[in-house]
Image (cartoon, rainbow, N blue to C red; front, side, top):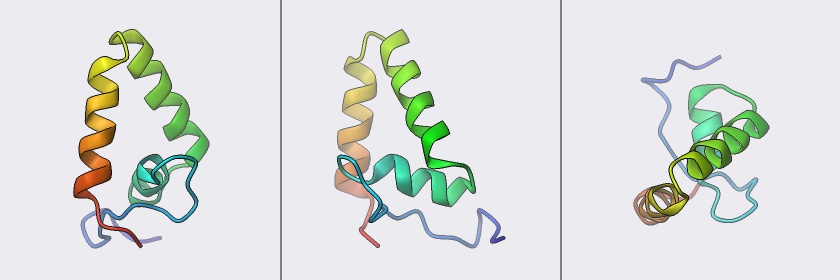
Length: 65
């Protein structure tokens, strides 16, 4: 398993929308389903708007695999 510091943060090709959650899961070494569920829960609990903005910003900033 690679360490987080040595792996680059990239959008995943295993994507549902933009590949951001898949890329974060791969970078963290977590299951992609857990990251997607955590993102949904955090977005709902924060009234969805901040979570959507963060996702769009990461989609623009993160390079593709």
